[in-house]
Image 1: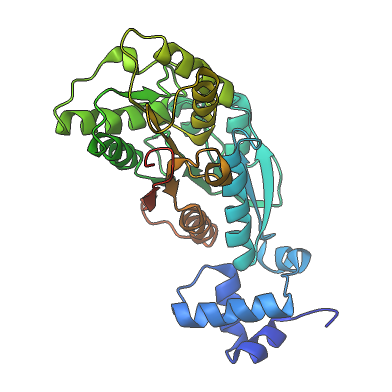
Image 2: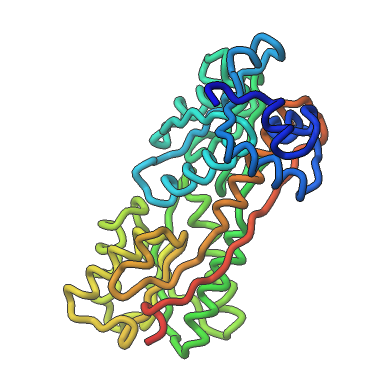
Length: 335
């Protein structure tokens, strides 16, 4: 077909045109089996909503913005793909922007980018403070992603970072490791991720009766490979080096593994290494990396659904929604 219409999708799926409209707009609850059947027809027929016609008819464009701190980071790249897939399945288009953690840019995006065709914004803020966010223009609905906590009327979607960090640390302790280091500690306004993962790490140590040693939690400037490599060098130079390292993301873990290899330190024989995010690189590192895997597709779906509800006029109180996670055990912690 040159142009696939709602009517064509409805006939293919065996439902009404209104049901198809409800599914692609994501604003009305539809039975999961019906939603799945409609989305299968949307995919098979290649249906794409006409944004211009919809804007004229409803005042909405079907375009939402996704703003992340660093698109080159594998986790954010994979999350972007999941959000695009979730939005496409609901008949929306995603405009992606990178903030670089600049608070002025984060505020501009939180206020709708000054773009009249943006229906809503998904934002993962890094340095935007509470007061600035409270003062934003509220022209468009906003849903927050990530670990920064704000006391304002906006839905927030994230994973339970404390529980996840506690789980991976407990895994290392269960292997008999007792000098478990944490790579990813940070200071300042952008340290929400570090604070939550440090809390889970320390809770696991406490539960195992292992005292916290500040020397095993070096501060890092950023969550890049070079930062992980530098931190691992400092840890290995300690009079009593660690026998396990929990890195707060997989890039830090990649750097730590590089340093271990350079120093001839066997992983996991002499030191076990675990990461966080379960990016694709974790499966192919040598050794393959044990990591916490956030359910990126669930996170994306929850965020897009929350945003579409607000775009549709939902005025219920803001909600905090948690996506799932799991520990993926690989060669870096178990031979």
